[in-house]
Amino acid sequence: MSTQKIWDLHLKYDGPVTQEFMDGNKQLAESIAQEEGVIWKIWTYAEGTNHYGSTYLFKNIDYLKKYREMHIKRLNTIGITDITDHIFDIFEDLSKIDNAPIG
Image 1: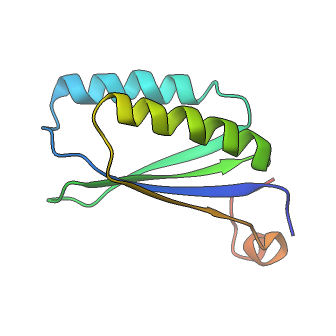
Image 2: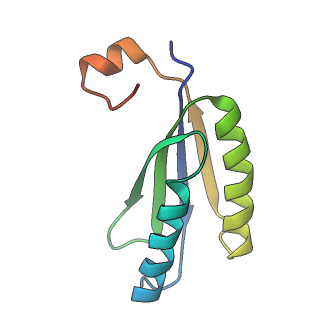
Image 3: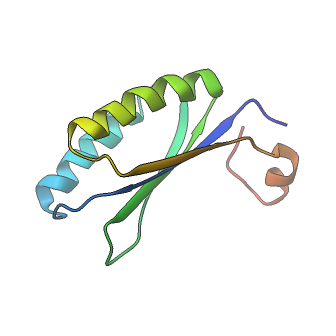
């Protein structure tokens, strides 16, 4: 087992995907890259739908919990409230066999 944690986040966003939206997300991505405890984040979406998401790898559960609380509040502030998420442990040895980008 690993102390690293996966956070899988899903949300619905009904607004338009404009250049302004993408510029704002670029700034957010640059900010997230500086967050303590975040190893990486993958941004996801289901084309043609209002479904968006992210999968993060955190150094440990403490960093994840701190970031999760802040980020969900941030999403709520901009009107995103349809959010589901899960926290996963990692089978590190098995994941490494399949070239997972973990420490």
